[in-house]
Amino acid sequence: MMGIIHLLNGVVIGIIILQTSVVAPSVFRVLGEEHAGKFLRSLFPKFFVILVAVGTLGAAFSFSSQQSNSAVAGLLTAILAMIAYLLIPATNRARDEGNNKRFGLLHGASVILTILVLIINAVNPILGY
Image (cartoon, rainbow, N blue to C red; front, side, top):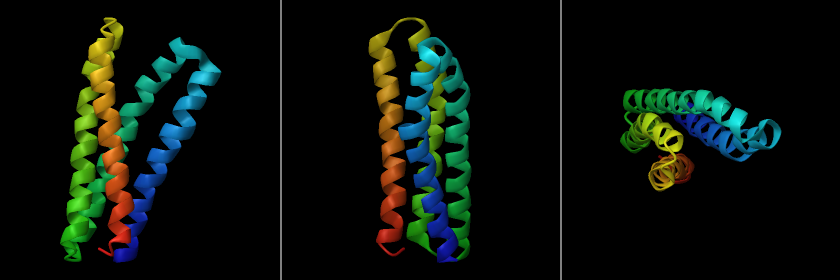
């Protein structure tokens, strides 16, 4: 069962790295800011929903195999990704209104939440949980 849990940790890590270091920068380079923004507004909600689903699945497998620390990692993944998902409408609204300070704060919060999810999923298998 730990193999499945660690695989799910790897899936989360892979999704985050692919999305943030390959997809998003490439989209801006290829499509330009206006079209890239529209595309990413469609993509990022799905990104966070997938992280919520994988985190929930990891928590379920962890609970069923009595791996409480891994269950906490799965729950944190799901909760933090859900918070980031819920920030999306306010972040988009701030961008649309030209409120750069609010946009920066909300986008920064989303980035921090994503980094925390990445760290949680990277550390979980290393600690042997």
